[in-house]
Length: 449
Ligand SMILES: Nc1ncnc2c1ncn2[C@@H]1O[C@H](COP(=O)(O)OP(=O)(O)O)[C@@H](O)[C@H]1O
Ligand SMILES: [Mg+2]
Image 1: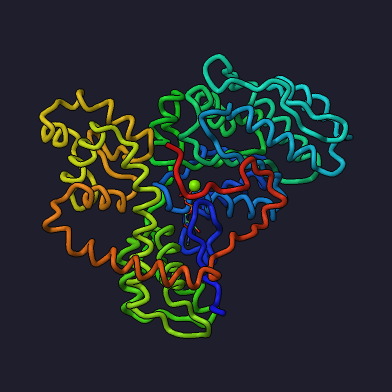
Image 2: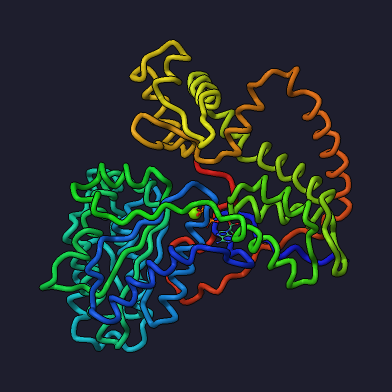
């Protein structure tokens, strides 16, 4: 029997070791402390942004756990375009408060229920929360910001009456909320921190793709006053910690060449470190404390790249329209070493104007494939996908042999893996029982298109 891999590759899966992110955590903890001490944040709302796999969901959940440990009531939601996010927030807050012991004697209980009802959410005597009328996420179902603000304010008041410090709401994937939802949330984010005469002991911490700042700017007038924190890749030493600490705890090490190869390939992406660590582990199938070698890492890498290629990346590529494929190909050719291309260069390569390709540009951004960089600039949300596009479109003469080699390796590995498939990683069980989460189950690694 081989030792089970400690790594957790997959959206939202808690890693065995959280590396780095101290600055991001401490920013959130400052907000929590301000609520504890002053009963309000009095600060611009905090939004974590970053490309997929950077650890936003993990970070939000860790902040939620910390808040919970400090006595905060926590309501966590994950936005999507089909649901009214304000109503989702209301329902989740409803559940969180309905579960509080002894809350129903609190003076503000009836007022709170009335405010909840304005969002078509009801709590019955048994504390069961129901949506009486599903709100339309579009303009027809638009929820006025003050309605949600007042619900949050009276919820936070109840929380205080229970001798708890306050209410924390987390919203993941904020960029995917409908426009109407973003307008409401954007205004509430603003108003919660604002009025010193009516302090609200609550805050909303959200996370989303890098275009979140654009999408919230569209939503409200004052969104430039948000605190956007872009999650960078892990530094070399943080990446090494993420890779090595979990293995070391099981008595397994990586030799220097293996570490070098994996870290170079992962390029600071927490997701790729989990994935490559996991596949290297599976390739080595250690059954006792031992050293994983560069040979294991190479085999792990081959499987991992096949997984990326044949899963997510292939789907993305196949679903792109012919014109989108042309744009992607041109962007790849024009990427500078920092991973950024000028849209005007891309357009001129395609013998078009920037306006001609603006539709493809925005649909690729909406799909989360490309992301705006600076003014007139664009990049890929995942550098590995840029490499995939390059491999799809580059000359077979220069590309052929190595890919052939890789395929042979993969076939051999597949056979080996089939033989050892009991070494599959089980999904982790997480201690989020206390946190009211609208989406406790992370998605399956494929992305919504
Ligand atoms: N700080 C970290 N250290 C190590 N691994 C991490 C860290 N943050 C996230 N991960 C891992 O990276 C992957 C992606 O994390 P996730 O939070 O889903 O990213 P995002 O929400 O930005 O797409 C998961 O496999 C997770 O275990
Ligand atoms: Mg996420």
